Length: 311
Image (cartoon, rainbow, N blue to C red):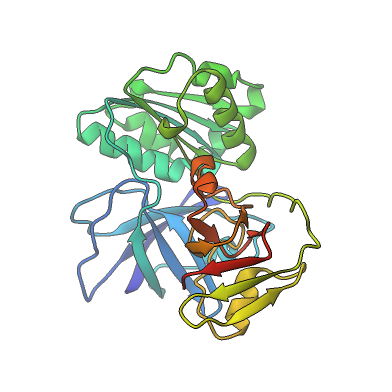
């Protein structure tokens, strides 16, 4: 779908918010947690969360932290201006609110984007929830003014790393039997929350997370050579230590959709029909890794000598 930048505003000195509109067709509805793919150049596509959940959206709003070390994605977004046109895919939702009695929302930094959408949706639905938002400082708090003016602002607490550390255990203490926990932010924050939540007695199935970037897990056997067979054709390809499955299959003419290339978005995830994968992604849960039914082609490798994938 082709869209146009209708509004651009700076939420902080390093975070830009864009409103995208379509003048040719109605924008598809979406729920909190959804993202769209922005096609920023022919060779550059990135996923960004939508911040304004709606059954009949007049626009899509997204907020993007302009990373000074960007590989191109956030830098390209920061260069967009009102009137610019671009193409998008989506929306798609891999971080959707599941049915529950109450919710605990935790966000750090730009991880506020899906969490802010969730707070709006839960309030509109009359659901019980609390939210904690951690940033570096008040000046670097995206959507700070909007949150302060929200009718549910009393349900939101905030903390700033410039003022000292916080006890993550306090944020996840005393889970209720019908409570779901959602967390988004930097990898270190998410990992700390999940570790503390497990210690506090939260069941894994009630812990929901979304990573935007991550450090790839080290391979258990980085020199292991293995083959991948494409089930639909029977073709087999050897995967050397210095190349990903996605790279080899793409070079051989198999279309592999990619976005993050860090194992956090799920774009390249496909069914695994045979073999044992060495899962290196942060997109799937430990239970999904143990089931061994899917694999992320951008980063995961093999423990067995052969993997059979369905693409």
